[in-house]
Length: 123
Image 1 (tube, rainbow, N blue to C red):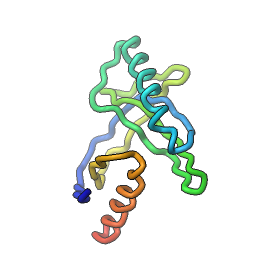
Image 2: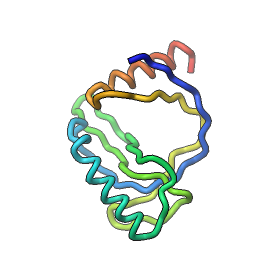
Image 3: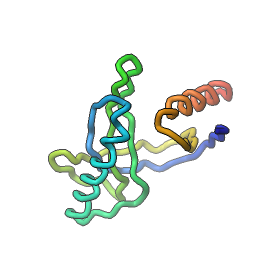
């Protein structure tokens, strides 16, 4: 895989999600069910999704392998959550991005390469 980072400016993006703390290796098994629950909540509340689903990493513990993530979907404006589904917002600003393709098991390598690229380019 060749790393082709890009710098993009993004507006703030509201979203709704379910927060979970779990072992990194379980995320691939757990995320689909969480997304289904979020999308069902959105449909029940007649709230439109305005982009692809997201997994936001809030905490990554490399020692234990645990992560705390928000698994959800972007929405047009901030909405009130309910029980397990809560609102959040991705901050606006300039971001270094890269598209990861392949196994989730290799995501840490892609992340490390992106961080190294940023350091090498003084970003």
